[in-house]
Each structure stands twice: as structure tokens, then as C-alpha cells.
Length: 609
Image: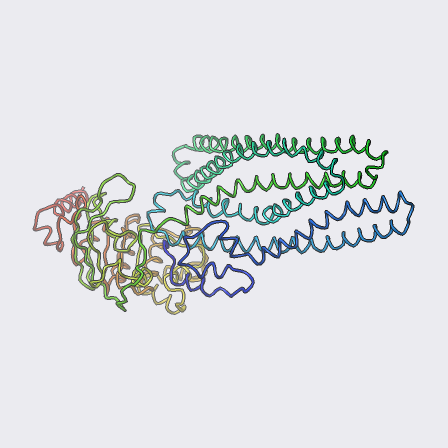
């Protein structure tokens, strides 16, 4: 489905409330679906994030206390020879370590749980937006790139929240706290130690500027890899049939190599920056030892203070490395944020009206009046040029014409996969743009040229159009289109589990199941898009008979690939270059001696030959 079904929306609305988290609010506020940013997403989870922040701040504070207790134990215990002072310092150190142990466990649990909940909420929002977008998005965007939004881009958030965001805040607090502690222990030595901040800041600015560009490039290239991978899987039969495996592998290798080069370039930056930070840490250690060695003999600095200085230096540079690593994750997440925000900002070309008409049960009278339409960004001009067509309630009209005449476009407008650029498409006198999209499609049955069957049982695939249907309803629909015997012959009947896209069934069996699905929906308007085009003669006969059954008592618009199928319709509309060139019954059009008559003569000649 290209838009969220009422059943899907009902399931989303039925999610159980979670009072201490916000993912339900995130779903319930569907009217704000397009509003997306990282601060907004985090604000919805501010309570669990605040708790996680508190826990990691306690962890950081425990780390700051350790060197001070070490100083006290050395100066008051070891140097002064006080066993009591040494035991007190050691006991307090043990208490701090135990508290930090429990706090670390709780922080890991809270941050991990919050990250997973954020990911669930984000995935639901992205999926709802993908379901909301109209058909044009899927016809211009590669499936692999769409998958990248739902996988790589979304997963990047989890990595940032779970492993970096809170730790980055604490690293900043620790950095400032250690700086204050160093100056507090000894002003002169503290300022000398902090002098390494100048080259550190310069290196950090350089690293951020260079890495930002590389991370953006890497994300573009992995999207290209995913898109090519998905397309290659979809076309594996053609690749093998035309001996294209080598070229396919070469193309995939080239795309992968480009991604590799961008990632290796980013790793070169990492390999330069982080060792430089470690080098500065060693320089700071050397400064402290060199200057401290001159201060201790004079009594200006105690031995415990010197040891504390060295321990604090390790704590001072650890946050810098953490912040740099978080920045690495943030650069990748920033690109993901931008791409997801762009996706969420997209408008559907078929929005539901804010105040829709409520006609109740529709009967199926269809009218296209002066309809013009061109596919967005195609550059091919108008596909329909002033189409006028009226189909009375309960009648069957076949659309025929050459490839590119506009037959499939008419069906897409009738299904409201697109809206006309000019003119109107009405159902029982109601402009489709004025009807609620989900209400309208609850009156619609649609069977494409290659019906899509989902992984699951035969019964589930038929009931896809009406999930609340009983087993008896499903079987009745199958019997109505003549599919029951074929289904009963399967290993487990209606409970037979189908593989991906129903690949274990024949094309005829898949179409019969699709027709049963349409029958179960009890539509007022049935659209059949060349449902027999890919079938052999025997399967075509069965499916044609099923089409005849399902089209009774409801308005049916069908694209007829074979003229004998069109002949059975009440009326035939001949499309030519985006217009309805002829309209009438088979006999009337033959007598007219126009386009349809010539098409029929060509068919008879080919059949006779």
C-alpha cells in the first residue's frame, strides 16, 4: 500500500500508553508528522534522558573524587605516618567505587533502554511518512536509498544516543571539573598544565572541518551502494540470463571502492588526531613531573598533590578523546538527521482534505472531465490531454490503445495515486480530492498486472483487503472468483505459507488470489490493470472468468491487453496520445472503422496466421 490503511492507523492508535516516555505522543501527533529535528526528538524523551544524564554525572563526579582521596591518603596517611588517615581514605575510596559500580549499571540500562525507545519512535515516524507519500516518490527514488533511511540513517541515532550523547555532556562537565581541580591544587602548575589546550583546540578545529565533509561524502556513497545492491538483487535473473554477472560485480566493486576510499580518508584523520591528543597528554605528564620535581623539595607542592596532578591529567584528556569520538558519531548522525528531515518534509501529492466530503456508501459512477496530467519531473510532457470519460454505476469499461496512450495513467488517477493537473475525477459526483483518502480507498478494488503477494498464508493475503474478515468470508471470496479449488489443492490449503512475493505459485494462481482479495473488499469501483497480460492461454481463461465474476454488480475499469478481453466489456474506450479517441461497444467501434477497427483486424490477421 502506498498510504497508511485504516487498519494500520488503528493499530498505531491502539499502542499501549507509556506514561514515562513519549513514543505514543510521537505517533498520536500524526498531524505534526513532518516536524522533525534532533532537538525535537530528544525533547520528547527529556525525562528518561534527564535521568540518564543524572546517573552519568554521578559517575563523572565519582571519578573526580578518586584523585583527591589519593592525595589525602598519601599526604595525611603515608607521609605523616597516620594509619587511621590511610584507612579512612581507603574506606571512602571503596565506598565511592561501589557507588560508581551500581551507578554505572543503572546508567547503562537507562541510556540503552532510552536509545531503543527513541529508535522505535523514529522508525514508526519514518515508516508512517513513507506510507503517507504518494506513488511519485517511489517511482523516482531507488528502493536501496529508501532502505538506507530506515537502516543506516536511523541506526546512527541509536549509536549517538546510547554511546555518545550523554557521555559527551558528562565529558564536558568532567573537563571543566578537572581544570578547576588542577588550578585549585596549585595555580602555577595548573596553568602550565592547561597550556596544552591551545594546540589541542587548534587540532580539534582542523579535525572537525576536515571530517565533516568526509562523513557527508561517505553517507552519500553508502546510499549508492545500498541502492545498487537492491537493484542487483531485483534484476538477478536478467543479469544471469544476459551474462551480465561480471559487469554487475565490477559496478558494485567500484561503488564499494568509492565508499572505502571516503572511509579510509576519514580514518586517516582519526589516525592523526587521536594519537596527537595522546601525545599532548604525555607532554602534560612530562611538564607536571618536571615542574613538580622542583616544587616538592621546596615544600611548595606535596607528594600527594603531585600524584593527584598526574591522575587528574589522565582524567583531563580522557573527556577530550571522548568528545572527539562523539564528534565522529555526531558528524555521521548530522548527515542522517539532514536526510531524514528532508524525507519527513516531503509533501504527498495526494493529501486528504482538511474538511472532506462524507458521502457514505459509494455506488461507483465515475466521470473524468477535461483531465490533463503529466508525470512530475519526467520531462515527457502530458500523459493525458483533456480526457473525458463517463462510466455509469455497475458498468464495465475496457481501456485499449497503444503503449504510452495513457491507459495506466487513467487507472492511477482513478485509484488516486496521482491527482490531475487540470480537470476533475469524480466518483458519484464527488471530486476524489474532496474525499477522505482512506474512506475512498475502502470502496476501491485494485488488481495490477503483477499482483503483489506478501509473505504469509494464502488466507492472510486474501484478507489483506479486509483483515477483520472471517475464514468463511475469505473462502466465500475465493469461491466467488473460482480460486477455491486451486487453493484447496495447495499443501495446506488456505494455511499454506507463501514465500516472498508468492514466488511458489504460478502467475495465474497469484492473480486469482489477488482477485479474491479484491472481491473480499466488496468495492464499489474495481480497477484491473492488464490482469491477464502475463498469463498463458489456459491461465488467461481462468483469470478472465474470475474477472467477469468479480466485476458483476460493480463499476469496473480494466486495461485490456488482449482485445477479446475488451470485447466482453459493456463499452470500450480507445485512448490515443492521451485522449479518448473512440468510445462504444465492440460492434459499434467495428462499424465506425477507426482505430479500434484497425486494431481488431490486425488481431484477427495475427490469429489466423
